[in-house]
Amino acid sequence: MLKDCTATSDCPVVEHNLEQDSTGADEPERHELQLSIQQYDRLFQSLPNGLVIVSREGKIVHINAQLETMFGYAEEELIGKNLEVLMPLRFRARHRQNVSDYLVRPHMRPMGSGIELFGLKKDGTEFPVDISLSYLTIGGELVAMAIVRDITDQKAVAHKLELNFSIQKAIGSILKISLESSPLDEQLTRVLDLILAIPSFTMNSRGSIHLVEEETGCLGLKAMRGFSVAQVDACKVLSLGEGCPTAPASACSIINTDCLAVQRDILYTSEGSTRRYC
Image: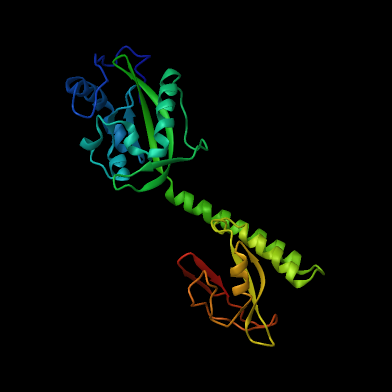
C-alpha cells in the first residue's frame, strides 16, 4: 500500500524546491526529491500501466518504465520537462488551467471518467488514453500522480461494436422501407440517407445508388446525395465498370442475381476517398 505522507510521522522529510526548468537548474533539489520517491519505485515499476509524477509547476519528476515504452521516451528525456510534452498541442492551454485547479483542490479521479484524452508519443503519434489522478505530499510539497493507460485497442473494439449496431439498425429500417408501397425511387432515396447517417460514412456524407437497367444493361442513377448538378447529370447513366467524374474509372464487379439467388455476395472496393459496394 502506498502511504500518503501527509498523515504519517515516519515518512522521510525532504526540504526542496520543485520549481525548475528543463535546462537542469535546481538539480540538487530535484535529486533530493528523486531520493524521496525512490522508496516507492519498486511499486511504481510493478504497475501494469504508465505512471508519471508531476510537481506543482507541472514539471515531470518521476516516471516508470511502462510510461517510457508507451510514449517512446527515455526517462532522462522527460525528467524536468513540462508534462505538456506528452499531450497534443490543442490540449495544452486547457491542461495548464486543469493542473492549477487540481492542485488547489486535490482529489482522487478514477479511470473511466468519460473524459476524452489523448497522449502524444515522441514520434508525433497521437493515441487515446485513460488517466486516473491522485496526489501525494512529499517533504511538505504536494505532487500529482497520474496512472496512464493506452486504450487504443478498447477504442477500436468499441468503435466496431458501435458501427455494427448502427449498420444492423439501418438494415432493419431499410427492410421496413422495402415493405412500404411507396415508389422505388423514393424508397432508395430514404435508404441512401440511412446509409450516409451510419458512423464512418458521415465524413463525406456523399453517395449514390445505381441499379442495372434491364433494357440497356447500363447503370441508372436512382438516388444521390452531396453532389453538384453537373455531377448528377454526368452520372445519370453509366456503363458497367465506369465511374463518376469524381471517382477513379475502375468500379467493382457487378453481380447479376435475382432475389431468389442463393449466392448474394457483396463486393467492396476502396480507392482514395471512393468506396463502392456491389
